Length: 596
Image (cartoon, rainbow, N blue to C red; front, top):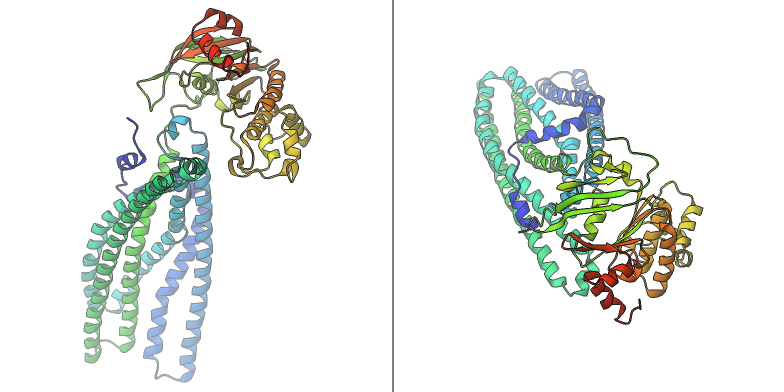
């Protein structure tokens, strides 16, 4: 039974440690120069911050000194402040630049990885969730690398430097401060573990919400056509509400931790101040020393409080990193061999299926292909026909190696596709899918997708051959007209003719047509059919069709049923033979559509 998005989400393990951030190291390593420069700026600002209380002490204790000495103290304070401002600005620039650079590299790496994954990968994860990981999760990582880590390191330096200066100023009061530290750290550790789990869960639900929204919006017309808006809105609202509830639990836990930590820190400071004030009255320390100690104590307390805040962000980033690492290290059952074989050139286009058996992972009990053996000669046009789900489109996908056979093999010019680099042999294949993919670009760029280095003249020639030139030329900006997301500004037939023009432009020795004329009206179908017949000359062509009129002229027709080849031959021979093909032909050609 197929698992829904919620079950998939709940089955995922949650991160157990912040060590998941180690996955970022390979992305940070190339920019060690920036890291070192940022650390130096960080150390400079932290050191200057620790010097300021010393200057304040001198000003307070020397307040009764002459005006000239006092002026020198204030002038020195201004210099220190200027250095602090410069160092802070430099640190911000370097760290932010590092964060943006690393996140950009992560986004590219994840996209590069996912773009090459086989369909099996997308059976397990929603496309919208992948997009959420690339955007939302990397934004969390950016916040950590570009800000939180820097602030955390600065507060660590101030924390330990402040503790050292506290010890120098007053060992007695410092001992009291240190008694508070373990009391503060315990809730940070205990509640931090809870935050880590909740942060990962929250990001999962956000991604699930994005996946649900993407799926519905990409199918908005279908949703509206079936008046399914109420149900789709309810589904999205339910997932979004779960994301909110998860976020609410995370926010509540973090708020409780913040209250506890801040109260304990400043309660400790107040207690230490009380003891310090008594020492000043007894003459055990000067007012300047107390002020210096108080400033250092506030800096230490602020450092601990900031670290508790940042810890939550770091844990969320750890969860986000783990989710991105899942994509970067996802196992794809279809992958290139470690050492691909050299492909034979020129490609002749001989295709062979040798006892191929295959089950889709989501339907393991049903054979998509069951012991299929088929040989297609170079330059031959073979049509695959049969009922829906008989295995025709699976054959097309096998030729492109979107799936690997469980038994048997698929070869091109005698070479097993599993021994070749996928990008290598796919360059020799042109595809016209049943549902043509039109990108949010100009008509010209959509056709040029078939061969990016093609000239404008070649694009136009391909469009003319596909009988697309007339309607393209009539668009407001001709071939440069924007056709909208997924080609929403075009009719189904126009989109299909652009897809055919794209395949013509590719000029590949192997041509795959999956219901290539299904969306065309009768007049356009006749024109495109003529173009396809010209295109198939000298090329190995595999045609999947339900409308038998489009395959009557094929060199050979192969009839599929339930993953098996049950007959093959010419149109006339199969009609004379009787059986499934003859029944399909009788249903179509005697229904008033066409005559044999």
